[in-house]
Amino acid sequence: MSGHGEREEFHVKVLNYNTVFSWDEAYNVVEQYFAEKGYEKWEKYAHEYHRKESKEVHSELHYFKEITDYFLIRVKFIINSKDLKYVEVEQHGKKRRMLSGSISFKFGAMFYSDYAGRMTGPHGGSPIWYYIKELYDTFYYNMIKNKYKKDLINDIDQASNKLNNYFNYPKS
Image (cartoon, rainbow, N blue to C red; front, side, top):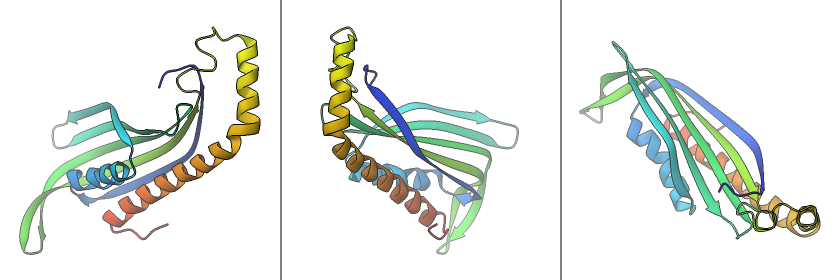
């Protein structure tokens, strides 16, 4: 994914909650959705910091899918939480250990063209190959690119709606 192509970032969506929740359940809502849609996952980092009476968790995940050998789509998913404390909650007559605190989710769409550098990389980035790539992008790939960008936006919207449903918030 670190080829010589172009990267376009768009459609950032942020969700913030201050509530009681299960970390595993909230995480799995997004994990299952992108797995069902055929995305692969790469975890950039996951840090947990323990304070005197609370903890913080920060994580960045990337869900990606190769559309063709020229296009790749990626969802950057960042989780930041603070002031997390364990609490006991009664659900359906059973006591559960859950977390209480602030958590924020940030989705960002990324679209890569020529992500492997096939049009520009192997040829040393000569001007003629950049020109040919621009012609391809302008006259041939734009229709295809726009369709996959719409699909990516839809995937982010659906994943965020599923998180809203988990946290018992109405869809926005």
